[in-house]
Amino acid sequence: MTRHWMMASFLGLILSLILPRLAAAEDWLLVETRKVPDTCAHPLICLPKSELESRHLLKLTKKNQNSFFGFLKSVASISGIPNIAVAGLHPPDPQTLHQLDIAPKLRPLRDHPGVYFESSKLDGGDVTAEFSDMIRQRLSALGLRFLTKEEWENTPGKPTLSVRFSARLESAGCIVPFSLSMTLKEEVVLVRDPSQKISATVWNYSRRQNLANTNYGPTNSLFEIVEKFEADWRAANRAG
Image (cartoon, rainbow, N blue to C red; front, side):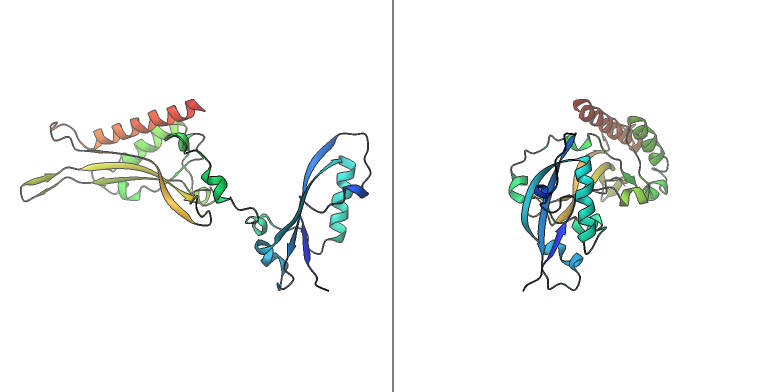
């Protein structure tokens, strides 16, 4: 007879009928069973290929919950399954994502977890040597966190702040103005295929040399960009 591994997580097996009910506070538990192919060398490897068998709600007292979880532990072939092993069992549904409204332009700045800002190129430039200190000071005061590399690696989306400076050039009598831009990028998934992840721009603003104003320099551009970010950040979080 075909043998199947049955995975019972928090979500578990349907045993409410054999557990007594007591007149005490009860909690709702979502109970789910999945069938894992028995052709796997190890069932944990095949959890993403498992098929949903049933899904129910149990209303159990604390005492009955203890009995329920104790029973599961006593019959389980494998216990202590890590979160990463079941992370892909309930992927986002493209049709459900398709029905979502487009977020307002500044919504991604609300309750933001912070950014990673690698500034060595700025710090090494003659014109931009002090730019990163100013950016960190102003945006930290605003409430934006600057993440360490380790924090960034563990933050969903890996938000990254970057500043790019292009110097003023003259070529064949033509002036190519300097430009400065600040960009906040994050990793996002495609609505049509949530298994695909790409990098997307969450916020961007740029300024370039004002040829009508000989006193307008890169530092002026930086101040305007930072002020724009501050205004957008306050608007986004005030709306929350």
